[in-house]
Length: 144
Picture 1 (cartoon, helix red, strand yellow):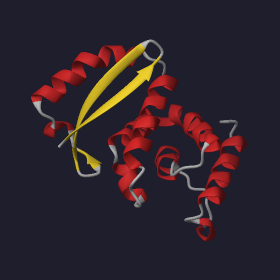
Picture 2 (tube, one colour; picture 1 turned 90 degrees about the horizontal axis):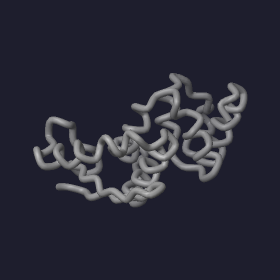
Picture 3 (cartoon, one colour; picture 1 turned 135 degrees about the vertical axis):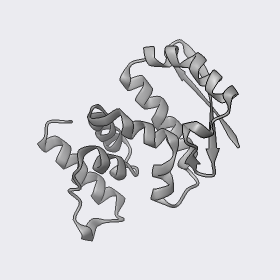
Picture 4 (tube, helix red, strand yellow; picture 1 turned 60 degrees about the vertical axis):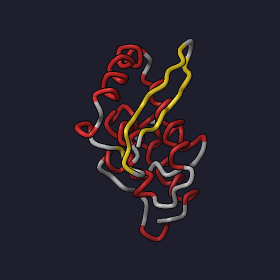
């Protein structure tokens, strides 16, 4: 199964093709030669975008593909979410700003990147409270 992901940023409009197996992104070895060729053709242009623009593209793609998922585990398995995690520590301030703008399930990414989880057990599953705890965590570390 393939998925076409379109995005616009600055003066660019691109289409990305990504193979997928259900809700999880397929490993690179499962991509068809055509998919790899298409991604490779666009990669130099994509890499010229700022980190913020690339992050926003991944966020929009993740939100579009996760909107009908009820499992946070399935949401976190999506390729765009995994790519955000792969950005590493530079993604934390971007995620926190996105969490501040619109609370969403960024907690797995924040925990995987930071190695921390400041949310007490009694708050788990309560999105607004979890977001507030992470935002306070970010402010304490001057990441916001």
